[in-house]
Length: 191
Image (cartoon, rainbow, N blue to C red; front, side, top):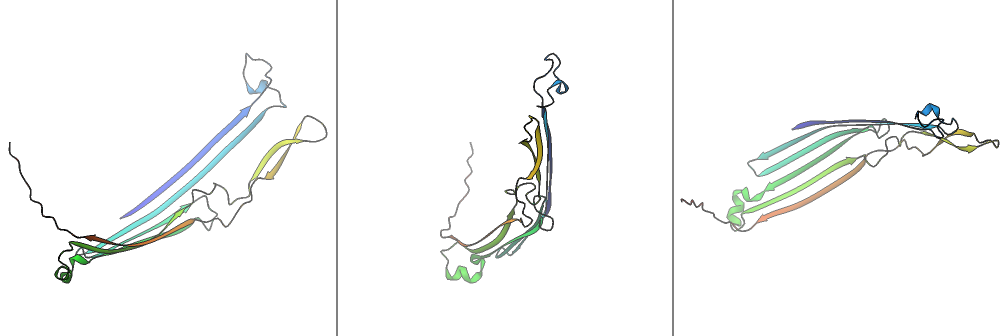
């Protein structure tokens, strides 16, 4: 089995305001006080894609194998660190299907050994642009005693060009045992 997943998200927003309108009969931003007008624009983009595949194999329902691999890519991460491969595998052995097992332990109707190991990735806890040095505009600074506010720019967060995938690794093993065989007969009721 093979598959492909793709997400593309874009948000655009504009906010503007104006106070002390010259006329309340004509509500337009152009008739407001020039000293109190404000506007802001926001654009956020995010993209994610993944290619994945799974392979299952069973030999006589005795020996079981499943392998999965996925390659994920996220725009939240810095170029060069956006793509990562996440493999996983599981194996199983149905011992009760072996001829020698039923002769040795006839009271056990099911006995399977199994083990698995895998890695998964996550990038959702990372901000959209945490790997970039972004500037934020401020206008709360008053210079020279006038009421006009001076605009300035500052770096609001410290970027990290080393942000990568959060990788979660799991492994486990187990034994499935069925001890009692129950014979069922079908009953047909005719009315």
